Length: 231
Image 1 (cartoon, rainbow, N blue to C red):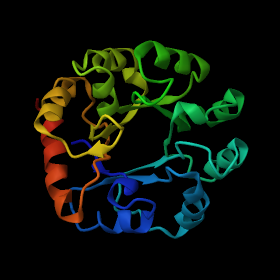
Image 2: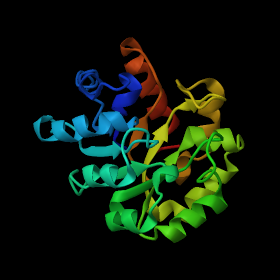
Image 3: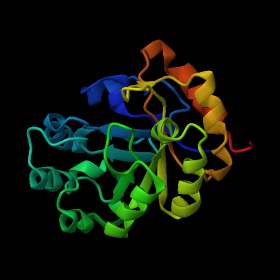
């Protein structure tokens, strides 16, 4: 059974403590992504980690800031180095301004494919270039981003065929035209089901759908059914 859980930022923007608290009541949740999408959130979250009770989660990852606004690249990198070495660090390509610096993370660096607002990491060819630059990096497939770029999901299948050995986790949500992360609708469910057979049974599912507390259980059930290993 695939580990499943939410990104803390999806449940409580900028409030990792609430994002964790909202997940504790659901026995089926055994994965979590700690999110610091805005760089102003990074230091506070990193400082808090030694005191967080994460014992119930079989899988923990960390989402680095998506843009550099208040911190410089080296400061962000130094803060990320303080994370437990077993945690994948999900990174958007645009903050990788000094490749030699980020290559020091080795397999801890987990590159995410991007949506149509970005200029790199969107397509198979662009991902090839990134993995050439970061040969030890692993892969976070954002299925919503992939569907936005190619609604047929053929590109996503090709990504999985080529980079499947690097796959560390999935980001799961529907993605709107402005990049907003939405609950899975019928069209997204149908699209994502086309790639389910290419996902390893133990690959963690990190849900990024922005939902209210009362919608958490339903979204877990929906995502679980789409990626059910018996499909």
